[in-house]
Length: 251
Image (tube, rainbow, N blue to C red; front, side, top):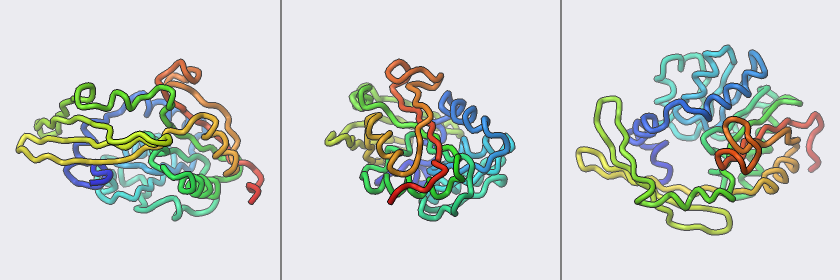
């Protein structure tokens, strides 16, 4: 199943248990809070961990995701009623409706095709007010993180809210032209095994900067780690903070 941890009800529960609040959430919340009381877009919000927290912090938040099962889990979270939830893609975004847009948990890498990434950035530029900020994370390909996505290094046990345990591991199935394909394996206590496959695009810093510029964004800064280290000295990340140009991009 493609993207099963976002689309399959049972795997959504596993994803929530495996991905608690972390330093990435602290980073995004701190950046968003630099614009008090902002209208915030969380594109690819998933199960809404950060989305709900931003709403609790006084922002007016919209969470957008194409996966209905993830949005159902997000709506059910305490405080979920404070968020406007939309099932869909960036194509549905209204014009100039947000001061800040975030893409977290490496959502930016799910746009594998360059044309799809360009369309998404154009939608985000349209949805942000002039001068609005776009904040997202993407793994630095120089870190070669995928080399640890194998059945030995990726073995893990995930405890569910009901006390049940899931064994999980990951295997890479292909690496080509900056795109890495992989499959997550999930083995449940009742012997059901579910698979979730995906492909992520690893863009270089130069490629990210070029794509943002073409879409009408100016890069403010790029960090390499969750504590705002320089690129190459942090957590193997590109943490991008960009600003929507006050002029429309040239067609």
